[in-house]
Image 1 (cartoon, helix red, strand yellow):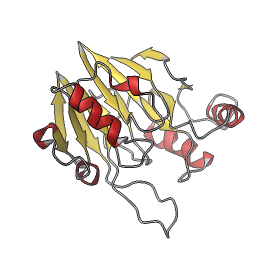
Image 2 (cartoon, rainbow, N blue to C red; image 1 turned 90 degrees about the horizontal axis):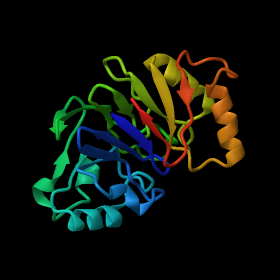
Image 3 (cartoon, rainbow, N blue to C red; image 1 turned 90 degrees about the vertical axis):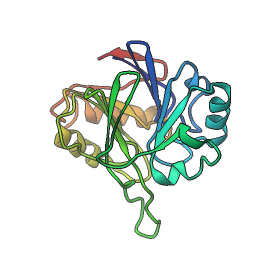
Image 4 (tube, helix red, strand yellow; image 1 turned 180 degrees about the horizontal axis):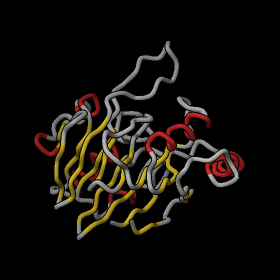
Length: 212
């Protein structure tokens, strides 16, 4: 499977002619939808879910379908069976690629801010994208997309999350809110220069690919 990091929280996954795109939100370039057979949305925040852009992509490609949680699916009215609602424990298959759903809630930003739903996607048993949460899947994770910055987290929690999941490899995601200096600081902490996350860590830039 080929992984391509796109803007902010978005990644493209390609295998055997099938392309999945996860979280093409408002900080992701519009070309993220091109060639996609399925769009997976972890939750409804603007940096993960761009409703006008998604509707435009669905109109342009009648075969394109969406998998997301209940609250996000509720915003996509009028699209009928092309929008699939999924929750923790569900599984589905797109073009021969198996997907498992893990997690229920967005991480706490502040006790005064109501929590929203958030699901993570484990794709073909090879890669897990948690969205905005530190969800630990109930089975081993080979490749982990790690949200490295956001208003709901701190650096120590990122380190502990990678240690708890114990992936074979970790990759950066959710990083557009950081300056270049901020990215350097976080990437150093997660590399061999930091306290240790017990897994190889690779910061990715938009457009960068890896064969998993």
